[in-house]
Length: 60
Ligand SMILES: [Zn+2]
Image 1 (cartoon, helix red, strand yellow):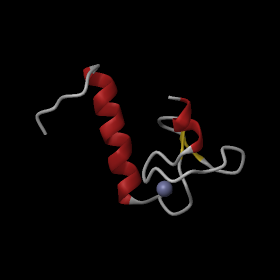
Image 2 (cartoon, rainbow, N blue to C red):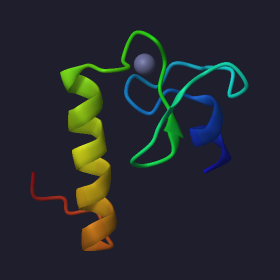
Image 3 (cartoon, helix red, strand yellow):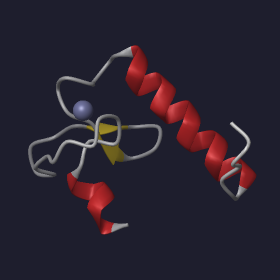
């Protein structure tokens, strides 16, 4: 799970946690390319959904 802290949570690109901004909602780093995009919002929604369920559903 430590990998989450130095990878953009949207595209998975490796980032420097010192210089990369974080998404305030889920407190994970997001790179300049993904910041503020629809992809970012989608990734946040997916993560929030997964946390709410407490498990990963394989049906989608
Ligand atoms: Zn990214």
